[in-house]
Length: 422
Figure (tube, rainbow, N blue to C red):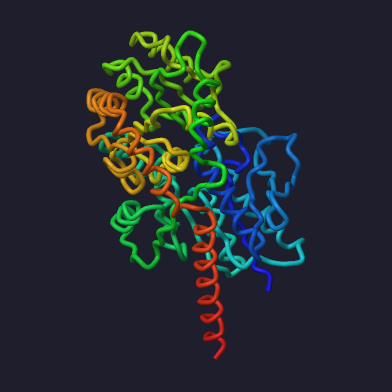
């Protein structure tokens, strides 16, 4: 029996270049790699995304069992998520029409992010199949991290909050990546634990490896600037250039360090990106402009070399529901210094594979970074423990867990339908 999944990623394509914009990051990796892993088994996955590039083919195959289908809904150009809600209904209708033309229906809908979940509610109801969703971020929780003032939310925020409440009430299962996230959603929506399943994001352990000592030396030499020695202490930041990532705090922390470390900021587009220019100007103002580099977004095959070249990955985010880059860095044998927020403490074990910073202030980060870079024995011990600490995030294990959840949900739905017939 063929098991077919309609996976929805309306606002961003899983093949979008990572880190280039604020809308392409860990979620894109999650959707792409989960679908590929499911497709390596007996499941068939169609990923539906909104067509945002008129030159992209309507359909692309990720492997023999996985297709990426671009659905026309609104103008065929990139739009921020805040402008996409008016096109959700059209997106849902066109996905349903695509399914009608196919030889087979779908056994389950799996949506990602609230816009996809709104479409997923409609499609799951129309097809009478289970609906699994993953919020990735929740508006009410995200607003708290920005210190949103009390009072009425903006119209866009209020719309999202309203629909996220409906999604939480209707979805058969909500996937969360950590125990911390499950507890937050349980309290926020009054949900029973049985409807919230913890399934973390995965990592490609074959792509992200520590390599040999020679590999690490070669990576450091290759990425070293011409004006600095290859053994200069190197810190790394990877991700979307979004305010929630706290990059201002990172630059301020580096400026306050006693050890003059070099910092590489992966993300954005160094050619004309306003946020890159703003961060570059801030680095100059702080007196560290000559030690901070902005190479832009980096393709995943090359990213492992940046992890290997770094003494530590630094995460100064206001909030992270999970923290995929932390897992990637640890898989590559690189310790992580991270803010003690969101799901990061479930990945970074203080004093075991990295260091956690309890207070989100520059002085606290600077002190922890100086401690790490100034202690060779500590750094070596954390690096040795890094990869073993994340081996349970292997995509094969994650895929097996998701398959089992899908099968349990569909079996329960078939049983319920059978009971209704008598």
